[in-house]
Amino acid sequence: MVEKHIKYIISIEKKKDDFASVVMEHLRLNGAYWGLTTLDVLGKLDAVDQDEVVSWIMQCQDQSGGFGGNIGHDPHLLYTLSAIQVLALFDKIDVLDIEKNEDGSFFGDIWGETDTRFSYIAICSLALLQRLDKINVEKAVEYIVNCKNLDGGFGCAPGAESHAGQIFCCVGALAILGSLDHVDKDLLGWWLCERQVKSGGLNGRPEKLPDVCYSWWVLSSLIMIDRVHWIDKKKLVDFILDCQDKEKGGISDRPDDAVDVFHTYFGVAGLSLLEYPGLKAIDPAYALPVDVVNKIFLTT
Amino acid sequence: MKGEEERERIPIKERPEWADVRPVPQDDGPNPVVPIAYTDEFSETMDYFRAVYLADERSPRALHLTKEAILLNSGNYTVWQFRRRILDALNADLHEELQFLDQITRENAKNYQIWHHRRWLAEKLGEHVANKELEFTKEIFCKDPKNYHAWSHRQWVLQALGGWEGELAYCSELIKDDIFNNSAWNQRYFVVSKSPLLGGLEVMRDPEVAYAIEAILTKPENESPWRYLRGLHKNDGNSLANDPRVASVCLDVLAGKTDYVHALNMILDLLCHRHQPSKELKDAVDAVSPDPNLPDAGLAENVCSILKLVDPIRANYWEWRKSTVPAQD
Image 1 (spheres, each protein chain N blue to C red):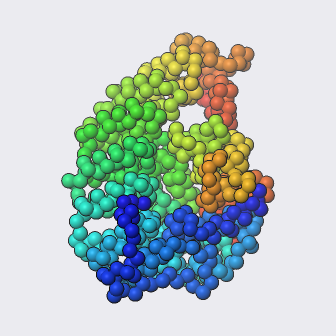
Image 2: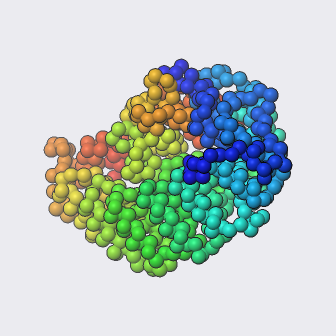
Image 3: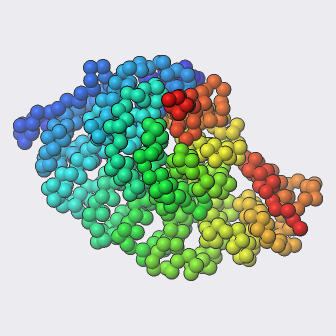
């Protein structure tokens, strides 16, 4: 199946007159991250032309230092993280003029932001650029902890329903900041393992349908709090494999649905976390292959 | 896409009001990476958008153009941001804008940019749109009662603009429609703890425990009311153990001999917080044990063993729970 998935990823954006590719146009940088990280986990990052990709990414960078979703688009946190992550895959973070990225007020805004997704993105980006000293870490942690609910989970803002995607963002941010002591691991671990339904797949909230992307959000969270043994790993592996398109490659949200690069990435990343043979190890907090993360933090 | 396109579209280059503008083509560089094959309509619209954007032209025609661009791709956050700048510059009628937003939200109910724009508008319009915003999110919930964006917006509206009066009743309504709607249960908790009209959790606990119990008895396999019950006791095991209604509902569920996983879990929690089980409870646990030859361990350990058998997908979790049962005297 590996060859088929690779073929699928290389071919996706070449489709003509495809509504999906048109509405993807403002988030091409996210799409690049999903596609390229999947290739790296499958051991095939060399299937793309590194120089072409790096040069295109740099064209997405704005004067402020942030990155837009595509050339000509306003800079935004969402795409800035993807840009940094893709550059990390190619070991090219040095092409970034790091000082230029440090616009204090740009990151200062996120504390008023009503979504914990941005906390994770900013913290992850700064960590990869090794510039965490630029933010008030205490305040960052405080905001995230305010979003913690009684069930041990996290929402997008204080009082919001616990949601696996938001939980990943909060737990990931706390993990990167070395502040996981704020998480009740037993309580959250239980909430997370209750996401596994009979089919073996994982949902994101109680009584919702399973979706392959939760194989990442839930699983990486469980790994970060050291509770992944509380789910049935084999059943989850079987569920993810069932979501593959065996003819054309790619992975969908649940069995028999249409595939897309987003779910392909999360399915493969999930399988990597489950130690499926033949895949590179992936870091649960940075969502990048472990060797890429090690290169950043263990050199210099 | 919406009704506007049903009229035959006139290319922008043929519209006299745009004659003075030179469109700016997309520049993907000399070696485009995976270039997208746009339709002519899309390319032309975005070429003209780039022109007004680069010129920072905040005019009525630019405003209209952003609408066309949004209708082609409502996720383009650059276009939305520029639209906001134009709306401010023209001091535009924001009520009209809200109507436009209503239309496209119905078709794109999970789009972050649209909800962000909505919040921006509502914040500017202020308290007098509180009811309208609550009504609109209700409309969204008719089609998707768990839409996370809509719930986030609704919570923001209540806290920033008010309108708490009917909220608890609305939660009851949603729960009546679908007792498994976790978002509705979450909202109920939000109202009970934060509404300035209700007196807070301490005051509301008693009637709400009764409400949760009724829901549990209706569908004991439903995760939500169990979590709600825990939330009412602030997740404090001792508080739960001291509320006789909690043990009582567990007993009732066990007596039904079906869908008792959550009940067993709750019993386990009570036992771990020094709840003294009645004989009835012990008998009820024995009655549901699939394995009649369980070793003569404590009640809590037996409950864990049963859970491992009846909820095997989480066997490792129940095994761990067994290891943390406090020593019995």
